[in-house]
Length: 154
Image (cartoon, rainbow, N blue to C red):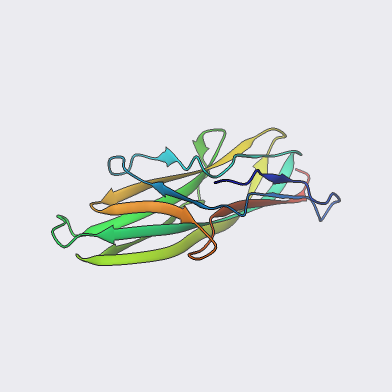
């Protein structure tokens, strides 16, 4: 289940913001190592006004490494893309090194980024290693979300 993006709840020089959520989903990462995929359950954020925006996101990473995994580790990287291109500095990383281990961590970043009106921000993730890897969001385990706050004109 996804909730649509909430857009421009308030306007004004210091109060313009957009955000996703709250969301409830489980997005399994089944691709090959380091193959980035869009976390489709997180709605795209479309930037309504040009300028500098403070962007923040958090993603609930879930990994489970089986006892017979070789190599015995599993990591998840999440990152934000602007119009399909990685935003450097948006990468967040978590995981575990050790067989027969399970871990859930909420990872994320906060940074400033210049956008044009209509730019689209999307959440992507990839896995490294063997085992079950997912990006999740729920009221019980933790939320995944993306938000942006307008800071200034360019």
